[in-house]
Length: 288
Image 1 (spheres, one colour):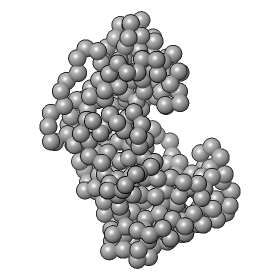
Image 2: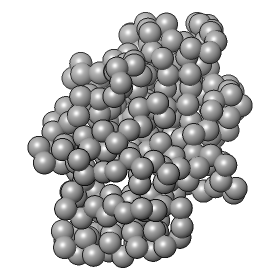
Image 3: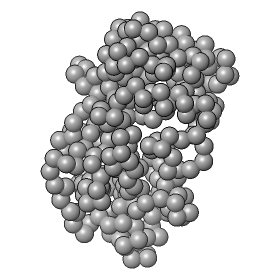
Image 4: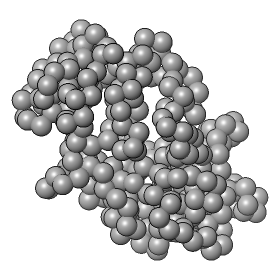
């Protein structure tokens, strides 16, 4: 076994795991981190990796030989070749020196692997004052009902054909939010339902795909979705209606929970906070 739980557990201030992203706090274990290192040797997906639904090969892998694991700090570097490539070092530690050491390691490994970007990912606890970066939020489906949406939100296929045809231009307009990628997956028949909202018989918002997958301890998790509303139609409650419809879908299809990542202070962050989600902590990514 590579990791010692008595060294690792005290510095896990937020439930985020290299190459996997946020995980439910109940799944955190030394075995989860061991699995990440084993996957690095094979290049494959772990059975509970949310990215396996997209197929292909795992793009990001841990750099096993460069992990630093000592009392008080654990540094786990990862490498991706996507685009111009990047090294990220996850800096688990209670003192600033861990971040400084992670930045030095990221810069060195970016040079060694000839990639353009070097980053440090710093997990921070939910009690962090004045947080920046990304908030990890939990929607627990076991604590109360998620009401069914009204007719303003439907799966794409439930609209008349003329309305369905407006999804393509909507997806292209929201390509920066991943909707063009999602549309390509829909056309290939390789994803779950996508919920949409309309204004004047035109699709102006969407959330999806709606898919459930067991987590590391076998509990059904509603997987993250792409989520976007056209800028000119915001402020009408469409985003909240879409999100609530997605939560109803997840609960009614047996999911136990969903994890979301929201930009601190952004519209989705505000929506999740007003909907009563639990904040599990933050991640702050900086350039090394």
